[in-house]
Image (cartoon, rainbow, N blue to C red):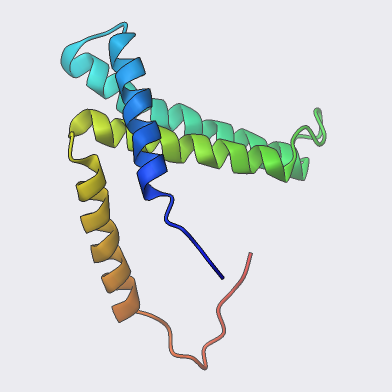
Amino acid sequence: MNEQSPAPELWSSIDALYEWLDTNRPVEGREGLLLRILKLSEEVGEVSQAVIGVTGQNPRKGVTHTWEDVEAELCDVVITALLALRTLTPEAREVLARHLERVTRRSAAHSAPADVPRQSL
């Protein structure tokens, strides 16, 4: 399987979106930074709404979303988080890489034994 890392394209897109958002930022300074971080809560709420919609958990509305909608909303969460990180630091790529390495090492050190079945979704 020939997988290529999406990192260069991903980060060039994040940088371009950051520049666009920064140029069109309605609120400056610390408040603008906090609002950009709070945008994550809105996006996570949209994931919840899509999951409720795809499973028909609201009997008044029924099924209103698809799993593709859930995927798209999860992507919005990832993009928004990366933009918030980029807003905090121009070294967002390096910060994420270091953190991902730590999380990967930590989870590998605590992985379940092979004979313990893992639950699936």
